[in-house]
Image (cartoon, rainbow, N blue to C red; front, top):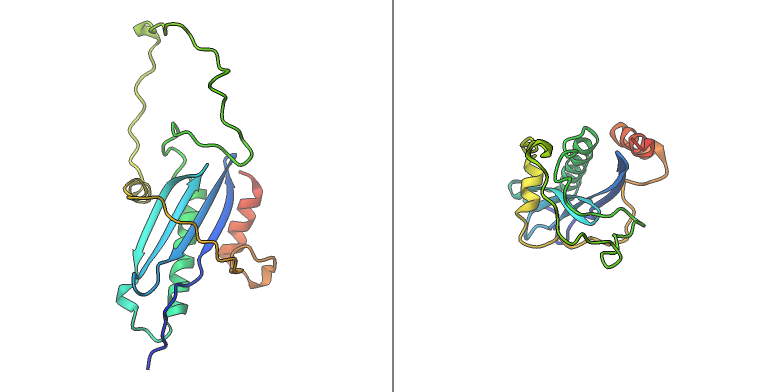
Amino acid sequence: MAKTFEKAVTGFNHNIKHKGKVYHVQTEDSGVSNPHIITHLFVGGNILATKKSSYGDIVKSENLPELVRELMEEQHKEMLRNLINGSYDNVDKSAQSYQPGQLGPDAAKAPRPSQPQPLPLTQLAPPPAVVALPPEVLAARQLPEAPKENNVGVETLFGEDLISEKSLDEVILSYLAGDGS
């Protein structure tokens, strides 16, 4: 008889610095009643990318919690790899976001020109090149509402201090995250 799996598997949260910005990757399980794994990539409080996958085809497995955990780890690491490999570097640079500890500009104190002067045609910049967005970014933009943060306070495989318990992928990602590049 299969084990019962009534609650969701504890998720992962990981902060990583990439090209001078702090990104937050969050992966969570929705539980058997809604068998999905969702990973979000945040920057400055905004969702930059989302990946959602279903595990409805394996809900009857005897070792479901272990299988879901493996799927979650792989999806989480995939988002981290994509970030480090630059998949999201050119996504929505115009969006307003602030890094931890950074305050937004005070609009009341900023001087305002009385009438903006149009630039001569010779000084206009060419239109920006159209960049194909990764599917995770398109999925994040189609979310009907912002995701809820998963604050269960349980230690996970990610962020542990003991290197001996980490996989090679995790050691590499930890090294790259500390590099600051």
